[in-house]
Length: 215
Image 1 (tube, one colour):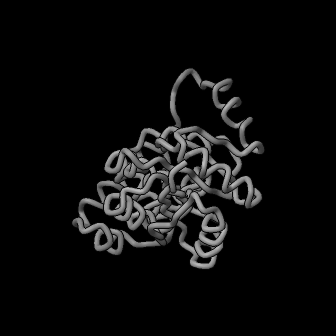
Image 2 (image 1 turned 90 degrees about the horizontal axis):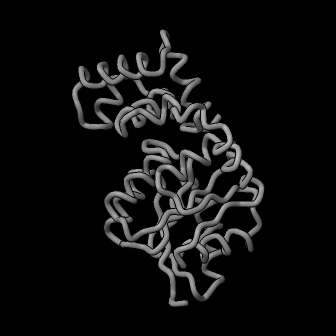
């Protein structure tokens, strides 16, 4: 196997350094970039064209799920490996639907993590044994083929939902995304309608339940 070029995306510097040390101990793996948020991960994937992007599912600004979706769209050669503390079928299936080639939980050993990255670099898929059942459950529980309400949101709506859950006001979200306040208020109204909630506080609960933000 030729040396695989890796991008690491995690909001915590100490965790990024730990992942870097684990991967760089393998001579076949090389870290080409690190990102502390989803937006940076997407931009760095475009700039560096890595073989694998290790994306933490829960990150500020732009969540890991949406980052994976955008990387697969803008840097299609880069394969994504989701890394998360979540072990429920909601987060696992969302990551896979977004385009992730694999999903590894934070409780995995260093050996398992390296195995997952290597498999992803080789064009294979990888699921931590502890969450493999989630995929089976998701297939068995088809819910009449209807995706969850959050899965039906647009990328920008998911982004706004995450920022609302992170406690930003509509004005702050507008400034962060470079759009008008009216646009954000429209997104907020659409979110409440699509998610069938009447209070903004319940939007936060939805975002937490769907793994868009950590608790």
